[in-house]
Image (cartoon, rainbow, N blue to C red; front, side, top):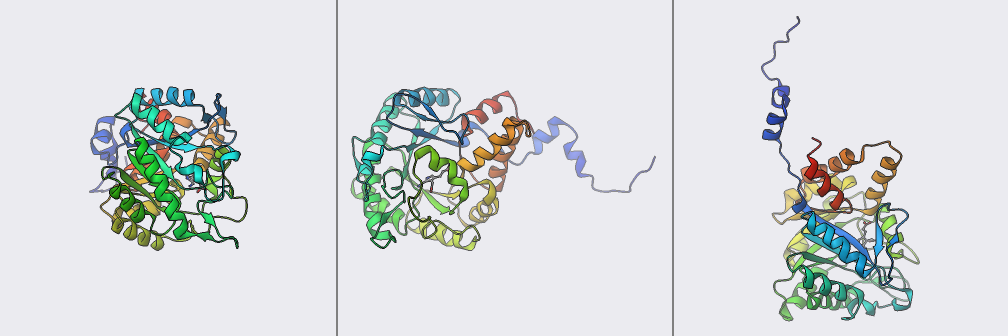
Length: 332
Ligand code: PBG
């Protein structure tokens, strides 16, 4: 029998489940997820075509889904509202209406599950008649500083309703510092900020925009969201968000940007989140529905890869599925 004269045989550390379990470097559990949910005012749950298994939830549908999430030991939800066209405006006033869909939903969730972390998205796109994250000048430019003023109002509205974590996703400059000051001045020193620090101008948000009917009416988001070709620029955004008082930073999308997650992980001691976005969900679902991938294995692998790259927290539409599958045992 041929025998290679090898000192090192890495396979020895893979020879049994026990040894593989002992030397595994990365862990994935329900505590790592923030579960994104779409809500609307209607009384039915409306399926989202490009996101099989996901719906725009009615208020009752949302409470049912939150109940399921809590039972699966998920600890955090993030809410995205589909707003009726009649409530949309150029300045997105509905974004800071204390009786709006988001504040009412936050109150309902916190009343029933005080321990559940409620995360809210701060940006104007669901409320903007232009479908942009900011306010438009007559010539079509997105006005940074005027937008930040409204974002502060939106953040305060969410804090008043009881949000635990405010998550600005608009990519305006200076919004983290302005929101921190606004929250502190109003006495909300315990409300956290999870900044969408490196959010790219990505095609992978397509299904989300269908879900919320929030696609830009004109133009694209390239003057505020980041260029997919860049990574050093992400580090500059991290520095600024750190200085402005972010409690956690985020990279988005996740799967196609694992190198950015790694670079940001190495650049900051802050906890890092990554968002496995709607397009990543849609791609996996499409292949799994055709039987081309094993859903449980492929999805859990996509998630452990995001953790391995350096993310502490993952925003994923697969959160309840993953929590269910992880109870049955890990595939690795
Ligand atoms: C908007 C926002 C977007 C997502 C989260 N917040 C879309 C966009 O920037 O156009 C995308 C999430 C997803 O695709 O799952 N502020």
